[in-house]
Amino acid sequence: MEKSRIDLPIGITLDRFIKSNQSQYPNAAGELSQLLRDIALASKVVNREINKAGLVDIMGYVGLMNSGGDHQQKLDLLANTRFTRALSKGGEACGIASEETDEFIDLKNNGKYVVTIDPLDGSSNIDVNVSIGTIFSIYKKKSAENEPLSEADFLQKGRDQIAAGYILYGPSTMLVFSTGNGVNGFTYESTLGEYVLSHPALVFKNESTFYSMNEGLSLDLIDNGIATYIHACKEQRMSGRYIGSLVADFHRNLLKGGIFLYPRTHKYPNGKLRLLFEANALAFIAEQAGGIATSNDSSVLDIQPNNIHQTIPFYVGPKMMVKQLLSHLNF
Ligand code: AFP
Image 1 (cartoon, rainbow, N blue to C red):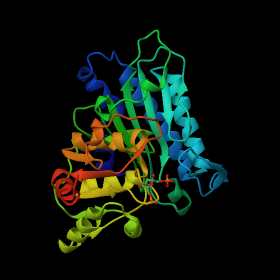
Image 2 (image 1 turned 180 degrees about the horizontal axis):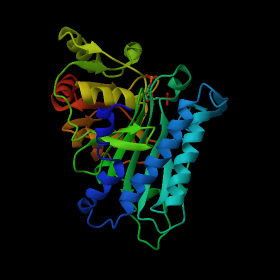
Image 3 (image 1 turned 180 degrees about the vertical axis):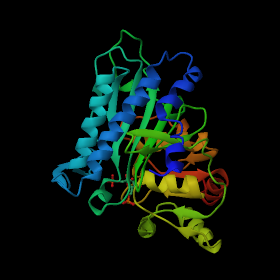
């Protein structure tokens, strides 16, 4: 090996980062750190399976639909199992609500936290080898220690998240998360089996460079302001970028400066994206990175959820861009 490579430092691993930031969670006695490690471990397994998805017979539909009406794919189920297993073995989470299951799971332990998760988002991109992701939120269990877990423990406002993050399975795999003290991004070094801090203190680039919306929806929009806003983007000669995997679109906009929109349509009059499994986590990260996320008339993080699979219209990006969008929507 060349000498220069031998000398190169590995950098700050996720474990070391979590340990050195432990003092930021004075009431957590290490459980939150362990929970984040459990999620990271499961993501490595999912990453391994995704990487060989084209090689073995784990791709394609299993013929089932989830409660949102999407086809479930084999990797969706695999990811759901992996995250559920890691969280139940860890013992820090007492319950999980997953986009892939109709009801929440009570893990029947004394864990302090509940987790909401979309184990594999953007799954229609799996069999065309395009980036996909995992999105998670962590909340404190609301009910008393001796009380059984109930749906109310999951129906918490996004503002009450203790931590949130996503994993992007792309050209490289990244874990991006926040515990309410800024946003940090870690890249997976597969030969070491470690996430290494690669994007410390991420902040939204405040430039109006990109907009991300499925423009195929333009004939189905309920709110006229969306069309006038997109027109204004075009007048500013902004570029459109839409991958169709929320994590990938969000991550791109975070790094390059851009807004993501999924408005309400005649097909999805309440929006398509799930408040608990997709929007809240990304809204939390966006705010921690200096951006904002809104639904039509309120900040995403202030919405009181009324059911686990609730969907909302979702707009997220740099403050200036989201404010400009809102000036086109008359709420
Ligand atoms: P899938 O997981 O079913 O592929 O849905 C992905 C998603 O929830 C989100 O990741 C995308 O931003 C959005 O749906 C794409 O929706 P459209 O295909 O309607 O643009």
